[in-house]
Image: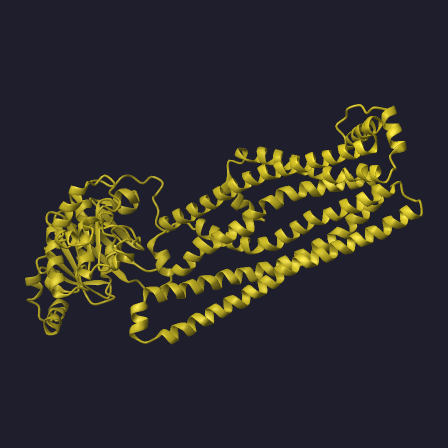
Length: 615
């Protein structure tokens, strides 16, 4: 139940709803119990067994006490008064009216309690989603590259849905049904101690059976949630790679893969459904068996004259005892249904409780304005789970206002080195310094506000062109956005769009060409006006015409800024102030384009020659 109480913490402050919910629930239960206790005087009036009770009640008016006996005596007194004044038909009308009023009040207070629970449930789920999303935003980049996106999507959607249905919906059962159970038990004890003790001995059998089913459900539910995450991953990969799937005529292969995961999930779901559905008929059977046992034992006592119960009281006792099964059954069903929700809640809390690998130090300070430059000092890096470094003792300085290019073959460590600057990762050894200050001593927001990032894959959002350029720049005017687009050579193609800057560009900018998407990404960086730029292979996937336009836009963007450029196409960085050649995570050589070409045995010379041949 630890997970259950953790989830309830999202409902804080409890004082905002607990007193009102407790009050409404208590009154709803009290009036609900009163409905059944009114059966006794109703039967007495109908079968004409009220004579002695009426005389006794009229002879001794009850004195107020906060007890069940006072309530019973007071009502008998009122029934007696009605019989004396209006006869049995008048008393019958009085009892029926009392039943109607009691039922009305019971349902009013139940409705008010439900309104409170609906509000609490919506608030809890809203806060759970917010906490999960906030944590996902705060986790380091490595968490998402190592994890499965489909599994995270499953936690944010299906797991939250399971928590709402299986856990939060049981709030009403968990808090109301015990009240009813205690109320029924108290009334039944006042009517017959012997029969109630038998009831208390029989009921744990039903609880034990439900607990056994719940234990099995929890194990299967955990497997079910994992399989659903895998299924969503396959679905997400299919959507993202649809061009490749259809291009390789791999629809059948992907369909078989999907069928395999879907069938596994269906088998587990059937098993869970069978176990969960068994709880209701099992508890009902055990409950009816208990009623029959009480009926036999109590009936024998009444027939033999060994009980204080009258016939009407015994009938009422059986009716009340049958109603005990309702909260018992509700609690049993809730206990079995809640298992899947608790597993889902555990998966949500697993993410919420994850500590970010990259976080601000307790004494972190705001990043200074860039004045001298960026320095890599004896930097080494190893990805978690790998047994060897991908960067080895890197020493490099990027002076303010200068452009340094990183080149090398795939896997040489170029992107990894660049990822250390915005602290997507932290070095495992050495330091990265901004104006002589270790990046780990600076707050992440203030550091990243000084960095503009343009990557090979243009990350755009399903929104307007205007919103994509002004991303996280709420104060930007339309004129500023247009000026940024002109610098990025994007204004001309934007105004040709159906709705200009207000055109929706689709998921990941799917309605635009690669070059257009890249120029929007550059315009976004221009509008941000950062002092430090990271350009990660920003032109490698473009055709010649698009590359020319994007390269021109990049030159406009780089002018006067400190820039770290990663490039495969060496022609795009020939004017860099310094070119650093990486090989196997080490600096193999460095210098300007012309200087590096003077070494025919160098790595840069070989790479340059290969590109000339490919062009």
